[in-house]
Length: 165
Length: 165
DNA sequence: GTTATTGCAAATGATTTGCACAAGG
DNA sequence: CCTTGTGCAAATCATTTGCAATAAC
Image 1 (cartoon, helix red, strand yellow):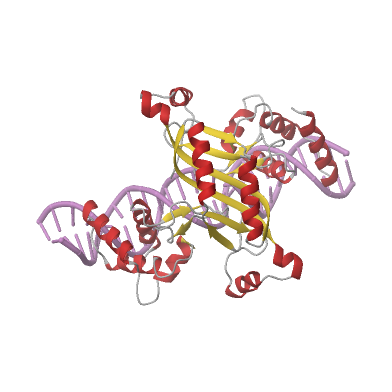
Image 2 (spheres, protein in one colour; image 1 turned 90 degrees about the vertical axis):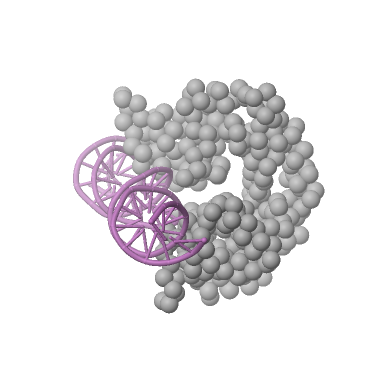
């Protein structure tokens, strides 16, 4: 876990008078151990091993705290569960490309995009706070070569691709 | 209801071998009677008067059909219900600005934005299909004058502003 | 007459919450 | 101690679904 995250977290805990518990430590560690997106359920599975008992309720409650502390962002990828993104402290306005075919999610930033949308927002009489661009696309690799490494990897790991109700 | 919508709908009904029922007619009429966004529940209330009986299930089922027929689009405005947008036949890639303060939703298009994102998508190895930009912003009017006509109107009509769980 | 459609009520599934017990400071 | 945090199970809430009754074609 990054020092910036640690510092911000300590500050948040102090300001809000929160307590340090084993569950929270474990959840926070799991959240920031990689910088991939995850769902609450995926996090729960990472954190609730046979040895350590952590309930879903606590996972959800801790996630809310981290979002409130601005250490984590909620994003909507079009499925029916919230996706959390631990990887944006140094990327204030990042956007997502979701592949309809292979499920890959690509994160990107673009200054030109940001200034374009900021200008539009002000023109409309608002002050921009946050933006998210979601691009849905198809995979050229899959179309041209009939296969895509990501799709194969996803199937092997049983990862959810897109679970629309 | 617009002739294009009617034609597309007729075509869809024919192709899929669907039947014309009183419920569907009523729902479709309600959907396209204005070009405002709505939730399934709002539509249900518009359509289920004392005289005519229409169940939520049928409303949901018809909404799915209309989305499948590409006559309606589902959008996510950050609350916990799907919002439907009947007003996009002539606006393929429209985007939304949601005001955190006054709840106003402004729809807009921008060709520059579209070509920018299309270029980025292709560079990443995908073919763009659909995009949605959601900008969250604060209301300058409210900040500068202490009030915003939209907020007042929304409160009077009891309209949902942002219902985050 | 078939086959699609409806309404109802029950099911689903992610998330939240009430509450009694446990644990941090 | 006193208050915050936890786990559990029950509650929510939008949406979906099974099924028997009904209505298109």
